[in-house]
Length: 264
Image (cartoon, rainbow, N blue to C red; front, side, top):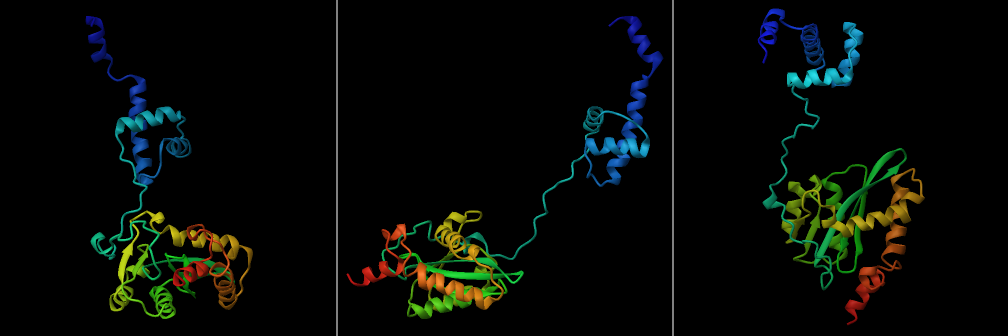
């Protein structure tokens, strides 16, 4: 370094640009703090013009903010403490084995919704994996444990109260509730859950809802739960279980598949 350059640096002090940048950093910090870390370089540049009368480029604001190492505001929602069972109590015992050898070995269940008179109504189904037959369905204005208990109890009654059935569902609070788990224990059933974030672990129930909406719900308008119940009964009992071919049944309907099994 030249001697003249060295002494010039100490004699002249800060340049005009450095003085200006120092003032800008103070304004940027004030704006950033008042916004509770919500504003980035572009928005701060706009507020510098409006509140401080300073016109600077976005790139300059960005470089100054980067040099100040300002902490970024997290945009992720804080995790809430939940009282759901631990993973060990929510084991996936089914593990996508969707083709049991006989009826009443594995039942799967899920919940969806339909719009009824400007509000939502919830639909719970129970399906026997052997034939893909919908063995029970219930509707309710509330998505709660009573809804799934109603569908479960109906399924047991219609199937003659079988023992040792595996009951598979997602990890919704209705299925993990103490009331529903107690009902399964009392009936002697084994409970199985889909893994977290893996809807394909319950693909059969998901697939049924896909076609229910495409072939029935989306084609109609409902003004009351009674209208929805009639529509579901006609679709499930009059078409899906009785007549609709299913690829998993070699294109037999669920009723035909079960009839063939019991005639062997």
